[in-house]
Structure formats: C-alpha cells, structure tokens
Length: 364
Image (cartoon, one colour):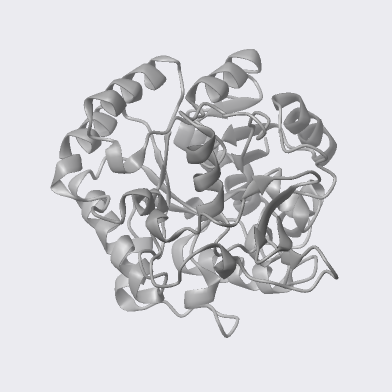
C-alpha cells in the first residue's frame, strides 16, 4: 500500500477559503512566497527576479510585508504582484492549473495515474482555514484520504482556537499540522515551546494524534535560527515522549548538505534521532528546479538518512499539487520507488506507506 504523507486539497483561491478577510488570505500567501523555491519572474521579458521584492529585508514578520505591490492570485498557477510599475509572478503551482484550486477529485485522479493508494491531507493557512474542507474530503473518500487539522499557531492557546482544536478533532481528523513560520504574523513574539502554550500541547497529547510539524528557520532565516527552533521542538519531544511527531519537509539541504552529503551538527543529529520524531523525505518540491530527474543527489541523501536513522524513521511525501511545477506526480514517487536501488523491498514498504499508516492509524 503506497501512501503519500503530504498532499493538499483546497478551494479556489479567488475566494476567502475560510479566512476572515481577503487581506488576511493574501498576506498568508505573500509571506509564503517571500523566499520561494518556485521561480519568480518579471512578466515583461521573463527575467529572473526574487521574492525579496515582496518585503522589507530588515523585518521578516508580517509587518515587513510590502503593501504597495498589489499582491494577487493569477491564472495558470501564478501568484502575481507589481513593483514600480513592473508586473511579476511566482510560479507557485503547476502551469497547467488554469485556476488555483485543487478539489479532491483532482488528487484522486493523480493518485490513480501514479499508483498511490492513499494520501494524508496536510493543511496550513496559505491554503485556507482547512478543517472543514479536509474533514469533508475525508468523509467523502475515507478509503483514500486521511485529513489533518490545524489552528492559528500563535493563538493556539486562546479560547477560540482551543475550542476549534476540540471541534476539528471531533470531525474525525487524525493529526495536527503545525507550522512554525506562522509566528511571523505576530512578529515572532513567541515560540512553539513558550509556556503560554502548555495547555494547548497538553490537550494535543491527550488526543493521542500525531503532529506534522514544519520547522522554520525564522525569524532570521539562518541555520542558527533553524537550529534554535529544532531545539525548541526537542523540549516538547522530551516533555511528551508518547506524542508522535513528523518533521515535515525533512532536514534542510541548504543548511546541512551543501556539499552533497549530510553534515549535521551534534545537537541537530541528536534531535533527529529522537524515537518519537520521524522525518519526511520530500526533495523535488524544493530541489526539483535545481536537480534533474531521477534526482541522484536526493537518492544519495535518502541513503544516508536510512543508514543513520533506519527506514522506520522515514516517510515519503510529495506536496501535491505544488510539486508538479517541477516534475510529475509519478516521477515524484518513482525516484524512490524505481531508482533508490539501495533500499530493500522492506525499506520501500516502510518509507512509501507502512510508516505513515502506523503513525496515523490508516487501515489497508
């Protein structure tokens, strides 16, 4: 059974997607593409550009996002903006996505073509306020989808979001998606292990659901910033040893594999080795625009992770439909399924499905 641990469904981005206002929705999108792996180009002539046009480099919070760029949702997978009269676009979704929306039937068709049996629907405020939509998709296609819930992370301890945590769990969603970079909205005033969130984490632990955590390198977006956030995560790993966690996106190549091999500082290696933490392997979404299929660079890094931590620690994910800006869904799985010849059949069974099935309680 092949299970994608990282896929998305979402409503048309021309609407509010559950947000309280259009402004808030667009701010989440704008912040996401300030440092994109996706291409940024000037509309006139197609010259390469940078997401730094979207913010004040001296302020990585929402307060530093430029308000004079007319940030907007365009056609064909593009997010568009204007600076000094010049139009630019970020190719955030695949070019073939004429309108930016991903209904569950699109993912089902992709899964049937690529040979994927089941998918975990992750969340995140960039896609919208997702609890009801993920729960709807899971209820409509329970054999195909497992949905995650999410909250406004910097406000997770407030009565509103504590109630939403309970409500979303009651909808049958089977895990929590948690994004560290969400703290940018409130100026990085707090961190995930701040004492104010003790009650929130205790409630999540009591639910016995896994946490899919996307670790950021903010607020300064350096290796030091990433390591600081990882050590904050470690404090929660130690405090809640029975709680299971998945590190979404896995270890960052740009920090720890610049030369093509993993070089983890001792404290980073220690956190990754924690038994209640697993690692997502998902290279094409960030490196598919640099490396060519079948990504031998990624294969070498997967082999090293397997040798260091064991196949039981690794879960394959795609980030569909976003990943098709770089490669097809079938290629996104085949670089592991067909080309990682160093993986045994048992290794592939674990990485491509069994590990996430065990983590989320997915039955064949």
